[in-house]
Image 1 (cartoon, rainbow, N blue to C red):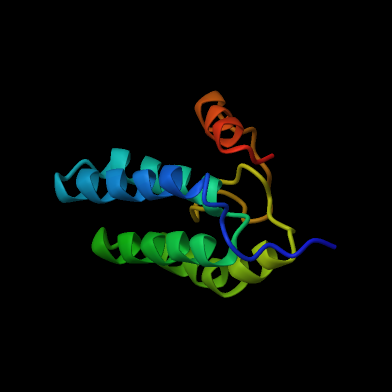
Image 2: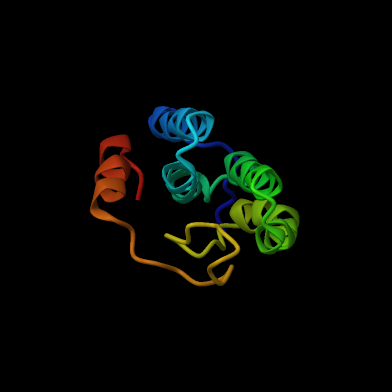
Length: 123
């Protein structure tokens, strides 16, 4: 079994860019676009405990900011178990991380994110 601990340095700029774009979109009131960037950050960072949990934390905060009870309730178990599942390499690849999708379901990874993974040299 492989343990995942830290995001590869080659992938980190892409993850950070998504978080930066999330914050900019949220600040400007573009909530759908902001959420999309959180989902993309989740897909990029979901294999690594710290980055995975950070996105779930931001999703929980987003839920509070927009007063979405379903998102708030849905993020709590994801925060508790997401990092553990990342650490042992048992994440549903491509899952966008929101409470609007099943937490254990894998999804196809969009082409643009596949290109990011290829550029970063990660599977």
